[in-house]
Image (cartoon, rainbow, N blue to C red; front, side):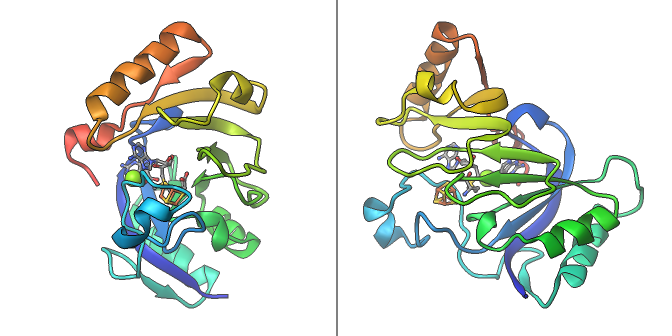
Length: 210
Ligand SMILES: C[S@@+](CC[C@H](N)C(=O)[O-])C[C@H]1O[C@@H](n2cnc3c(N)ncnc32)[C@H](O)[C@@H]1O
Ligand SMILES: Nc1nc2[nH]cc(C(=O)O)c2c(=O)[nH]1
Ligand code: SF4
Ligand SMILES: [Mg+2]
């Protein structure tokens, strides 16, 4: 099968428990919770998205005919060196496209594979790091993984209920947008009340990386 990629680039992981790690980001086009068009945002299931995932016109984006071609592209973006190769697969919603063929092709090139998902679709087998970020009002089927990353505040989500899910790390990330100062206060307050949680800041935005 072919893959629709919005953009792909080398940067540092800015979020979560692996923040600060060198990584190739592979951003698939399309999401199942929002069309990506501003005129649809108010009626979407996920309304706070900070990402343009429409089309294939970004840096390093395009239509890739098969898994080997896309994995070669990721390898070229990483450059020389076999040590600690990491690809973060995101979107949009990556589980609309990520399949076992791409997992195998990336592993064959020595990559650890991390994925950022909204959890409404079951994760592909064989991933090395799974981040699930639940969205209020959606049915999250993927309730186990490496990190649960809760964008906060989100009315309709109860952090205490999420603590029963099977994750190694519980991160709370302030919602970026018009109310980001209040969101930061709310995220800090959550950690103060519930020590299971740790604060995840979007470090790439602070330092000006993509
Ligand atoms: C753009 S999403 C793509 C992956 C997947 N669709 C998801 O939602 O997890 C990547 C990450 O950014 C987070 N995110 C999106 N909009 C955000 C915002 N306005 N502030 C903070 N985090 C945000 C998501 O919750 C997710 O953890
Ligand atoms: N540097 C950087 N780190 C990130 N971590 C998760 C991101 C995402 O959009 O999925 C992201 C992103 O867009 N850029
Ligand atoms: S689920 Fe993820 S990609 Fe889709 S609209 Fe929400 S934050 Fe954006
Ligand atoms: Mg992002």
